[in-house]
Image (cartoon, rainbow, N blue to C red; front, top):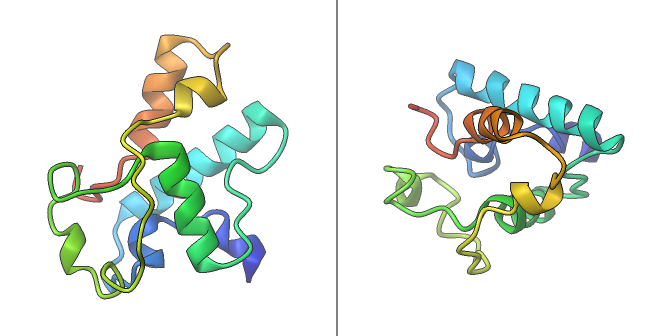
Length: 113
């Protein structure tokens, strides 16, 4: 289960029952980042650990960047760390702006975007 957790989109980890292509795009982002880093980008060992790793990397989700976030079934069950910054550029300092832009599009919190 932990292995599969690595590729799960945050909305799934937070209990959504609606599945869209954004879930697949998130998994593609995880695989691309794994290929670039030569190791798993988000090697969570549990769902809460996975959520914490996502927040460390992309910042804390909010209603501003993810409308409907607070209404997800499990959103209020976790106390998320306050991480205001996206750290993809720090994780991949050698990646071109186009590469970073692609990863940011794949790792978008709001599944409607």
